[in-house]
Length: 91
Image (cartoon, rainbow, N blue to C red; front, side, top):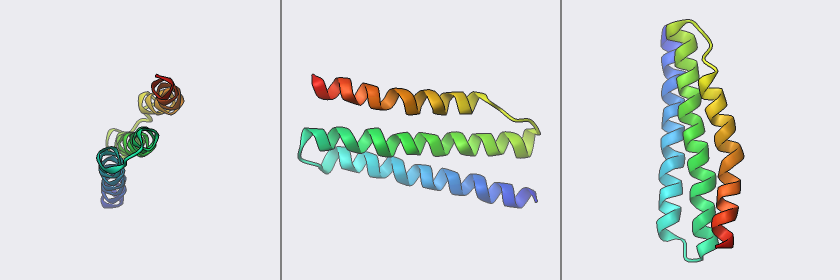
């Protein structure tokens, strides 16, 4: 059972890394400033969310307790990233 949790954590981390790379690549390669703003806010937010999900699964599997700190960070990130992108787009 522990091996299954390790695979789940690794899968979340790999998916998060892929989202992070795609967001960074989009920031570099896209031509339009609005497109450049869209790529990192969406993809990198999902990447950080994947890392936080992996951390939650690890806390449940290894430490034996539910950690709500990661859930609060995820909610805060998903709420503030679009607002920050909107403010940057206005400037």
